[in-house]
Image 1 (tube, rainbow, N blue to C red):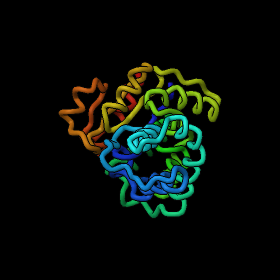
Image 2: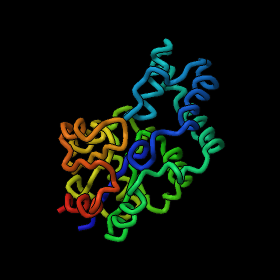
Image 3: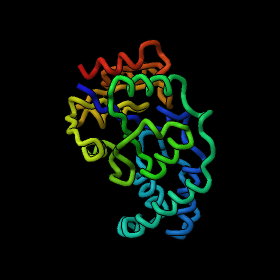
Image 4: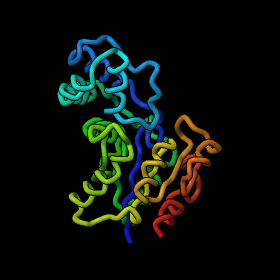
Length: 230
């Protein structure tokens, strides 16, 4: 059985977020909603771009109906801003990531993304990190404000791309926050938490993850991940 392995991006594949992505929100707030605001004060880890857009604008007094109505335009502004401003991210790839991706791919796993990033932003980051060749599908931040709802989206996208139907039991979700773990667990996937984001191993150990790693550079990380698929 060849599993579907879904990776978070920021804090899991890449060291933190990117300035271009963060500033793309500022651009959308200003051009689409006429607000000079930013994401300061919001906890970003594990959240989707939809959630962040709504939370920041709600705090600025914008009604949900207006946020929703202008959301497609805002997401378009964000994607264009990132495409125009993103730079080389190869030095931001976390230790062990390239090796684990290569080993999982060689073992026949289908690799995808489960990320709060918008789809075009996610794939732009992977291209600038030199990793886009590995990922064929995913669940992305424009689909829902709630991260767990991205899991069935990712499974359906992987089926569309590969022609193979993946069950949650065939799927492994990898991320750096409890929200990543909760998203997978809610749908019955196996889960891996890596302490390369804002949370330490001790904190992630209480998340209920099937496997907790200090980083993807741990010896045998790919084999331990594949072992979860049985």
